[in-house]
Length: 43
Image (cartoon, rainbow, N blue to C red; front, side, top):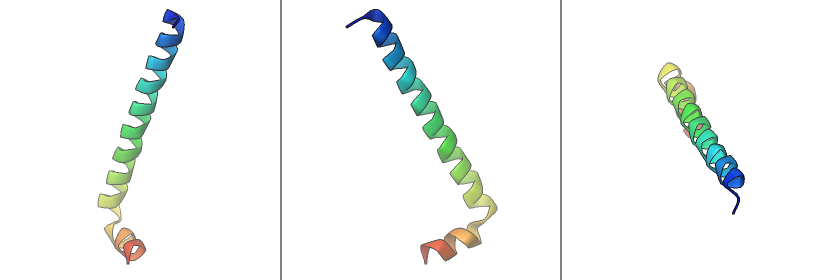
């Protein structure tokens, strides 16, 4: 494999990992902010 291709793939994985963490954090803050809506959705 090319070094350039390896760099692109590793950068892509890092970005996707960061975006996943950001999404999880946003969901957690929404859960703490509006727990009633989430319980309604679950039920």
